[in-house]
Length: 110
Length: 115
Image (cartoon, rainbow over all chains, first blue to last red; front, side, top):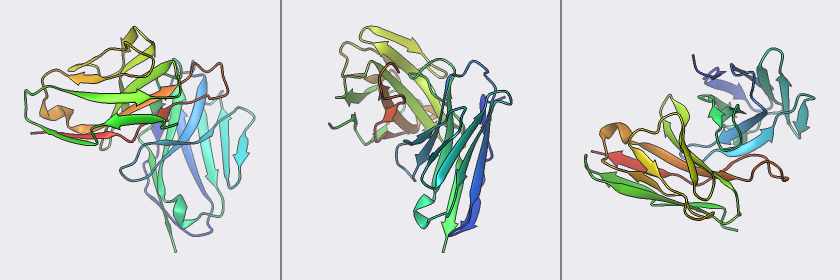
């Protein structure tokens, strides 16, 4: 069983929609949690860190539930430019060894 | 700052050839790592380093060697290329987490095709 599980999608949503991605992880020792964004044929880039208290960055909200080992990302008012693959990432060892989910593909359509 | 740089961007090898993928960072980061990304597999850790002179294996180390003689550079060597090593390779760096930066930054990747 992979340590980080994500729904691969694809999620096809119209502009302006709200979309939620979920992620579960198996290693309860994981210390840090992130959502990365990856555009086609490009490197992953940090979207946001995820904290137990929940955190928000503009249209993006991330939540962490340590008891359920569950991470979520909510995107409100989707834009065409949000189309990308979203990667759930945890760090059971440290910042030198990220565990990636396979990614969830999002396509925002006009 | 250039961030994390990787060379070459693309490479085609024949089975059995060897080569070195270069990675450099100018952020004085302690940690550096190599990942490969295959379709449907996500990114998987090959090798990592927590400082100059210190390296260790990740999830998929077979067929690869690394060394870390300086803080800035972390080359990945393919000893005898195999078609199964066809992939996109990403190098990443981060500080130790004690500072303000708290995650890894990735280079643009090297696309490798082994025939």
